[in-house]
Image (tube, rainbow, N blue to C red; front, side):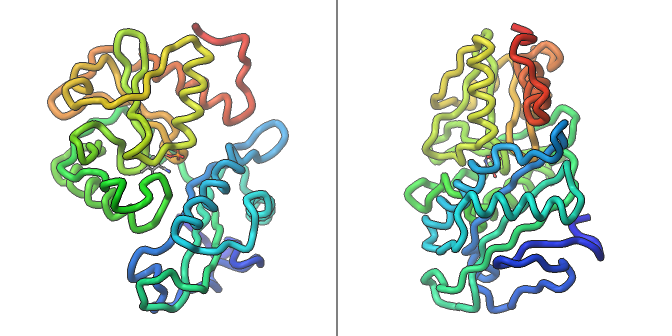
Length: 296
Ligand code: PMP
Protein backbone atom coordinates (compact mmCIF):
# COMPACT_ATOMS: atom_id res chain seq x y z
CA UNK A 1 0.00 0.00 0.00
CA UNK A 2 2.74 2.49 0.86
CA UNK A 3 4.82 1.94 -2.25
CA UNK A 4 4.84 -0.03 -5.44
CA UNK A 5 7.50 -0.99 -7.96
CA UNK A 6 7.08 2.43 -9.54
CA UNK A 7 6.96 4.73 -6.50
CA UNK A 8 9.39 7.62 -6.50
CA UNK A 9 10.63 9.13 -3.24
CA UNK A 10 12.75 12.15 -2.36
CA UNK A 11 15.96 11.47 -0.45
CA UNK A 12 18.59 14.07 0.44
CA UNK A 13 18.02 16.31 -2.54
CA UNK A 14 17.38 13.69 -5.22
CA UNK A 15 14.53 11.53 -6.49
CA UNK A 16 14.88 7.75 -6.33
CA UNK A 17 12.83 4.63 -6.78
CA UNK A 18 11.45 3.55 -3.37
CA UNK A 19 12.83 0.06 -3.95
CA UNK A 20 16.37 1.43 -4.10
CA UNK A 21 16.24 3.09 -0.67
CA UNK A 22 17.27 1.46 2.56
CA UNK A 23 18.30 2.49 6.03
CA UNK A 24 21.35 1.41 7.98
CA UNK A 25 20.50 -0.84 10.95
CA UNK A 26 22.87 1.23 13.11
CA UNK A 27 20.87 4.42 12.53
CA UNK A 28 20.30 6.31 15.77
CA UNK A 29 16.69 6.89 14.69
CA UNK A 30 15.95 3.19 14.70
CA UNK A 31 17.45 2.53 18.11
CA UNK A 32 16.33 5.61 20.04
CA UNK A 33 13.48 7.16 18.01
CA UNK A 34 15.53 10.27 17.26
CA UNK A 35 13.72 11.39 14.13
CA UNK A 36 11.09 14.00 13.36
CA UNK A 37 8.33 13.79 10.81
CA UNK A 38 5.19 15.31 9.38
CA UNK A 39 1.88 14.07 8.09
CA UNK A 40 0.55 16.22 5.25
CA UNK A 41 -2.25 15.82 2.74
CA UNK A 42 -2.73 16.97 -0.82
CA UNK A 43 -6.10 17.20 -2.50
CA UNK A 44 -7.21 17.49 -6.08
CA UNK A 45 -8.61 20.90 -6.89
CA UNK A 46 -9.66 22.62 -10.10
CA UNK A 47 -6.07 23.84 -10.36
CA UNK A 48 -4.45 20.44 -9.80
CA UNK A 49 -2.97 19.05 -6.61
CA UNK A 50 -2.96 21.40 -3.62
CA UNK A 51 -0.88 20.58 -0.56
CA UNK A 52 -3.13 21.75 2.25
CA UNK A 53 -1.33 24.04 4.73
CA UNK A 54 1.92 22.79 3.19
CA UNK A 55 4.16 25.58 4.37
CA UNK A 56 2.82 25.34 7.93
CA UNK A 57 3.62 21.62 7.98
CA UNK A 58 7.18 22.12 6.72
CA UNK A 59 7.66 24.96 9.21
CA UNK A 60 6.61 22.57 11.96
CA UNK A 61 9.04 19.97 10.59
CA UNK A 62 11.82 22.54 10.87
CA UNK A 63 10.67 23.45 14.39
CA UNK A 64 10.73 19.77 15.40
CA UNK A 65 14.16 19.25 13.79
CA UNK A 66 15.55 22.31 15.60
CA UNK A 67 14.29 20.95 18.92
CA UNK A 68 16.20 17.69 18.33
CA UNK A 69 19.28 19.59 17.03
CA UNK A 70 18.88 18.00 13.59
CA UNK A 71 20.15 20.35 10.91
CA UNK A 72 18.08 20.58 7.74
CA UNK A 73 19.70 21.77 4.51
CA UNK A 74 16.45 22.86 2.90
CA UNK A 75 14.07 25.62 3.90
CA UNK A 76 10.35 24.91 4.40
CA UNK A 77 9.68 26.55 1.01
CA UNK A 78 12.26 24.33 -0.72
CA UNK A 79 10.83 21.20 0.92
CA UNK A 80 7.36 22.20 -0.22
CA UNK A 81 8.58 22.70 -3.82
CA UNK A 82 10.29 19.30 -3.76
CA UNK A 83 7.04 17.74 -2.53
CA UNK A 84 5.04 19.22 -5.40
CA UNK A 85 7.63 17.72 -7.74
CA UNK A 86 7.32 14.38 -5.97
CA UNK A 87 3.53 14.38 -6.38
CA UNK A 88 3.89 15.12 -10.06
CA UNK A 89 6.42 12.33 -10.57
CA UNK A 90 4.06 9.85 -8.89
CA UNK A 91 1.01 11.35 -10.66
CA UNK A 92 -0.71 11.90 -7.32
CA UNK A 93 -3.29 14.56 -6.56
CA UNK A 94 -5.05 13.12 -3.49
CA UNK A 95 -2.22 11.80 -1.36
CA UNK A 96 -0.81 11.52 2.11
CA UNK A 97 2.72 12.92 2.32
CA UNK A 98 5.23 11.78 4.89
CA UNK A 99 8.47 13.73 5.33
CA UNK A 100 10.88 12.08 7.74
CA UNK A 101 14.11 13.53 9.07
CA UNK A 102 16.30 10.73 10.37
CA UNK A 103 19.82 10.43 11.65
CA UNK A 104 22.87 8.45 10.61
CA UNK A 105 24.93 5.64 12.06
CA UNK A 106 25.48 6.68 15.65
CA UNK A 107 24.94 4.79 18.90
CA UNK A 108 25.62 7.78 21.13
CA UNK A 109 22.93 9.72 22.93
CA UNK A 110 23.82 13.03 21.32
CA UNK A 111 22.02 13.87 18.08
CA UNK A 112 23.99 12.49 15.17
CA UNK A 113 25.63 14.96 12.78
CA UNK A 114 24.35 12.96 9.83
CA UNK A 115 20.83 14.10 9.04
CA UNK A 116 18.74 12.70 6.20
CA UNK A 117 15.56 14.08 4.68
CA UNK A 118 13.18 11.55 3.17
CA UNK A 119 9.80 12.46 1.66
CA UNK A 120 7.35 9.89 0.36
CA UNK A 121 3.67 9.91 -0.54
CA UNK A 122 0.93 7.36 -0.96
CA UNK A 123 -2.82 7.28 -1.49
CA UNK A 124 -4.54 6.88 1.86
CA UNK A 125 -8.21 7.25 2.84
CA UNK A 126 -9.01 9.14 6.09
CA UNK A 127 -6.97 7.45 8.81
CA UNK A 128 -9.71 6.74 11.35
CA UNK A 129 -12.31 5.88 8.71
CA UNK A 130 -15.64 7.59 8.18
CA UNK A 131 -17.73 5.88 10.81
CA UNK A 132 -18.42 7.34 14.27
CA UNK A 133 -15.87 6.17 16.80
CA UNK A 134 -16.28 4.31 20.06
CA UNK A 135 -13.52 5.87 22.13
CA UNK A 136 -12.09 5.00 25.54
CA UNK A 137 -10.07 6.99 28.04
CA UNK A 138 -6.59 5.52 27.99
CA UNK A 139 -4.71 4.43 31.09
CA UNK A 140 -1.64 5.96 29.36
CA UNK A 141 -1.02 9.68 29.86
CA UNK A 142 0.57 12.10 27.40
CA UNK A 143 4.19 12.82 28.36
CA UNK A 144 5.07 15.44 30.93
CA UNK A 145 5.92 18.61 28.92
CA UNK A 146 9.12 18.85 30.97
CA UNK A 147 10.20 15.43 29.67
CA UNK A 148 10.38 16.49 26.01
CA UNK A 149 9.13 19.09 23.54
CA UNK A 150 5.60 17.76 23.35
CA UNK A 151 4.60 20.29 20.70
CA UNK A 152 7.21 18.87 18.30
CA UNK A 153 6.47 15.88 16.08
CA UNK A 154 9.25 13.62 17.32
CA UNK A 155 9.20 9.96 16.25
CA UNK A 156 9.93 8.66 19.76
CA UNK A 157 6.78 10.28 21.14
CA UNK A 158 4.71 7.88 19.10
CA UNK A 159 5.50 4.96 21.37
CA UNK A 160 3.01 6.57 23.75
CA UNK A 161 0.44 6.65 20.91
CA UNK A 162 1.07 3.04 19.91
CA UNK A 163 0.68 1.83 23.50
CA UNK A 164 -2.60 3.72 23.84
CA UNK A 165 -4.01 2.37 20.56
CA UNK A 166 -2.97 -1.20 21.32
CA UNK A 167 -4.56 -0.99 24.75
CA UNK A 168 -7.82 0.59 23.49
CA UNK A 169 -8.17 -1.98 20.69
CA UNK A 170 -7.45 -4.83 23.09
CA UNK A 171 -10.59 -3.75 24.98
CA UNK A 172 -12.62 -3.59 21.76
CA UNK A 173 -12.66 0.18 21.25
CA UNK A 174 -11.93 2.00 17.98
CA UNK A 175 -9.64 4.62 19.45
CA UNK A 176 -8.06 5.96 22.65
CA UNK A 177 -8.20 9.39 24.21
CA UNK A 178 -5.28 10.28 26.48
CA UNK A 179 -5.31 12.50 29.53
CA UNK A 180 -2.41 14.72 30.50
CA UNK A 181 -0.30 14.27 33.63
CA UNK A 182 -2.82 16.36 35.60
CA UNK A 183 -5.74 14.17 34.63
CA UNK A 184 -7.24 16.58 32.10
CA UNK A 185 -8.22 15.61 28.56
CA UNK A 186 -5.24 15.96 26.22
CA UNK A 187 -5.61 14.39 22.77
CA UNK A 188 -5.92 11.22 20.75
CA UNK A 189 -2.91 9.14 19.70
CA UNK A 190 -2.73 11.08 16.41
CA UNK A 191 -5.42 13.74 16.57
CA UNK A 192 -6.70 16.64 18.66
CA UNK A 193 -10.06 16.62 20.38
CA UNK A 194 -13.00 19.04 20.51
CA UNK A 195 -16.16 18.79 22.58
CA UNK A 196 -19.46 20.55 22.00
CA UNK A 197 -21.53 21.77 24.95
CA UNK A 198 -24.51 24.13 24.81
CA UNK A 199 -23.64 25.38 21.33
CA UNK A 200 -19.98 26.14 22.15
CA UNK A 201 -16.80 24.24 21.34
CA UNK A 202 -14.15 23.39 23.90
CA UNK A 203 -10.66 22.06 23.21
CA UNK A 204 -7.64 21.49 25.46
CA UNK A 205 -5.34 24.48 25.59
CA UNK A 206 -1.74 24.21 24.38
CA UNK A 207 0.84 22.85 26.81
CA UNK A 208 0.35 19.10 26.90
CA UNK A 209 -0.66 18.50 23.27
CA UNK A 210 0.64 18.60 19.75
CA UNK A 211 -1.22 21.75 18.68
CA UNK A 212 -2.48 20.48 15.36
CA UNK A 213 -2.66 22.43 12.15
CA UNK A 214 -6.15 21.01 11.59
CA UNK A 215 -7.06 22.14 15.12
CA UNK A 216 -6.16 25.72 14.18
CA UNK A 217 -8.11 25.50 10.90
CA UNK A 218 -11.16 24.18 12.78
CA UNK A 219 -10.92 26.90 15.43
CA UNK A 220 -10.86 29.59 12.72
CA UNK A 221 -13.67 27.93 10.86
CA UNK A 222 -15.83 27.72 13.99
CA UNK A 223 -15.19 31.39 14.77
CA UNK A 224 -16.12 32.37 11.23
CA UNK A 225 -19.41 30.53 11.85
CA UNK A 226 -19.94 32.63 15.00
CA UNK A 227 -19.35 29.60 17.21
CA UNK A 228 -17.49 30.35 20.40
CA UNK A 229 -14.35 28.26 20.94
CA UNK A 230 -12.85 27.96 24.41
CA UNK A 231 -9.32 26.59 24.87
CA UNK A 232 -9.13 25.31 28.44
CA UNK A 233 -8.52 22.32 30.69
CA UNK A 234 -11.30 19.78 30.16
CA UNK A 235 -11.95 17.20 32.87
CA UNK A 236 -13.07 13.64 32.07
CA UNK A 237 -16.38 14.52 33.83
CA UNK A 238 -16.89 17.46 31.44
CA UNK A 239 -16.07 15.23 28.50
CA UNK A 240 -18.60 12.66 29.68
CA UNK A 241 -21.35 15.25 29.95
CA UNK A 242 -20.66 16.91 26.58
CA UNK A 243 -23.27 17.04 23.82
CA UNK A 244 -20.93 15.79 21.10
CA UNK A 245 -17.21 15.34 20.43
CA UNK A 246 -14.82 14.85 17.55
CA UNK A 247 -11.17 14.38 16.61
CA UNK A 248 -9.23 16.55 14.16
CA UNK A 249 -5.98 15.79 12.37
CA UNK A 250 -4.44 15.91 8.94
CA UNK A 251 -4.77 12.17 8.37
CA UNK A 252 -8.04 11.74 10.29
CA UNK A 253 -9.54 15.03 9.04
CA UNK A 254 -12.68 15.57 11.20
CA UNK A 255 -14.18 12.44 12.69
CA UNK A 256 -17.09 12.25 15.10
CA UNK A 257 -17.31 10.16 18.26
CA UNK A 258 -20.26 7.99 19.07
CA UNK A 259 -19.30 7.36 22.67
CA UNK A 260 -16.66 7.72 25.35
CA UNK A 261 -16.47 4.51 27.39
CA UNK A 262 -20.01 3.93 28.73
CA UNK A 263 -21.19 7.47 27.79
CA UNK A 264 -22.99 7.98 24.45
CA UNK A 265 -22.93 11.56 23.16
CA UNK A 266 -26.54 12.71 23.15
CA UNK A 267 -26.60 15.00 20.11
CA UNK A 268 -26.86 13.07 16.87
CA UNK A 269 -23.68 13.58 14.83
CA UNK A 270 -25.80 14.76 11.89
CA UNK A 271 -26.99 17.70 14.01
CA UNK A 272 -23.68 18.55 15.67
CA UNK A 273 -21.33 21.47 15.15
CA UNK A 274 -18.61 18.94 14.36
CA UNK A 275 -20.52 17.56 11.40
CA UNK A 276 -21.08 21.02 9.98
CA UNK A 277 -17.39 21.89 10.36
CA UNK A 278 -16.40 18.54 8.84
CA UNK A 279 -18.41 19.35 5.72
CA UNK A 280 -16.88 22.80 5.46
CA UNK A 281 -13.38 21.42 6.05
CA UNK A 282 -13.83 18.94 3.20
CA UNK A 283 -14.71 21.83 0.89
CA UNK A 284 -11.88 24.07 2.10
CA UNK A 285 -9.17 21.49 1.43
CA UNK A 286 -10.39 21.27 -2.17
CA UNK A 287 -10.76 25.05 -2.61
CA UNK A 288 -14.49 24.63 -2.90
CA UNK A 289 -15.66 26.46 0.19
CA UNK A 290 -17.90 29.41 -0.46
CA UNK A 291 -17.97 31.63 2.65
CA UNK A 292 -21.35 33.08 1.67
CA UNK A 293 -22.99 29.64 1.90
CA UNK A 294 -22.18 29.04 5.55
CA UNK A 295 -24.86 27.11 7.39
CA UNK A 296 -24.92 29.39 10.46
N1 PMP B 1 -1.90 15.16 18.01
C1 PMP B 1 -1.05 14.19 17.67
C2 PMP B 1 -0.39 13.40 18.73
C3 PMP B 1 -0.80 13.93 16.31
O1 PMP B 1 0.04 12.96 15.95
C4 PMP B 1 -1.46 14.69 15.32
C5 PMP B 1 -1.20 14.42 13.87
N2 PMP B 1 -0.13 15.17 13.39
C6 PMP B 1 -2.34 15.69 15.74
C7 PMP B 1 -2.54 15.90 17.09
C8 PMP B 1 -3.04 16.55 14.74
O2 PMP B 1 -2.13 17.43 14.12
P1 PMP B 1 -2.37 17.98 12.66
O3 PMP B 1 -3.75 18.56 12.64
O4 PMP B 1 -1.32 19.01 12.50
O5 PMP B 1 -2.22 16.85 11.72
